[in-house]
Length: 429
Image (cartoon, rainbow, N blue to C red; front, top):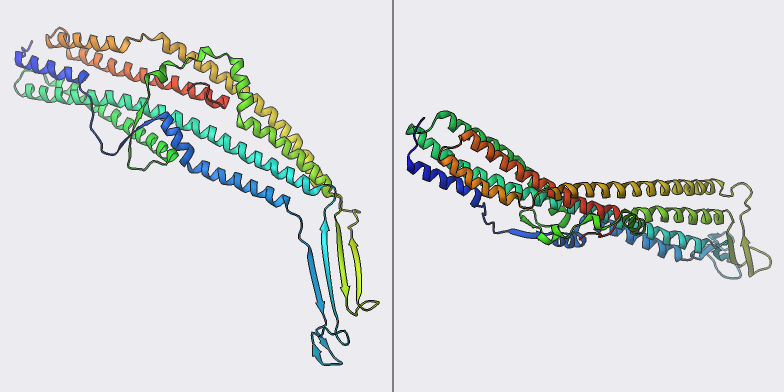
């Protein structure tokens, strides 16, 4: 067995201790600390998709203004172009001229104007529910992305600490290799682990960058900002899914889900459209007032006219049938939406309980105990009571357990946000 000098043991022990005490805390001047609440506030104010959808709502409100307007009256005028007898153009005199003028007004019957107003008003409700459903979907995407990035950042810290300490350990062993105090296989083993960690770390950083880009796009934060996400301990501790029964969550979803309200409003829209199409089958009346200088009997003719189409062939049969079909389709869509909602709530609730049970099954002191254990492992490795392979295996186990815990924490918090998503409300903050 090769004997290792005491000074190397001391240096090696200090190096390994750095692994569990040092933190990669490089300060970036443009770092932004961001909580989920801060991100949601920025999202509501600045998200381009929400702003675009709000314009759709404003357009629907403009349709109501249009529906309230009455038809404009129409005026017409006709003048004699050329009088052959007098050889004059556009004469208007009573002796030798001739012109005709009329004023007409369309009067809609069967309450078409009010029915158009109701249809347009229902259209506003549809646009509003589409806005709220888009907000619900995007907010869940934001919160899920937020928690994924946060716990990935926590995992990245573990990688950074391990890489930093392994680089120091590798440098120390390479020096000792030159002195003949360690074997080549030990150096290669450390290099292999270091390269593996660096590859995993680089892949994780790429994932974090993608997640960070999504958050920036959804909150309209400048691209060059470095986001440092913050999750309070209370945020993790206050979440208790078993405190809310399934029936309560289902009732909340039935009352608050914007997509369900959208489906119900779709039925109202189809019903109002059917009423309008039936009214359109009734002809409108056009009243007119006519004045003719000489073209009618007697001169200075003044007449009152009425025009009414005869609904002999076209009674709007096609549009009425389409409106009836739309009602049946909307009812079917509502049934499908209710079934989807019930299944989503049940699935999210049972998944949340399963994840919570797994999370609570872990010892809360597990990580702390692991940290204490590594100190003993370092001592034993320094005293050559365990081999390098045994130490590196424990090293890898520490990383795996930490990453597993971060993944579980993310799944737990994502389950919380999924319940909020499927219920359409903030059940858990």
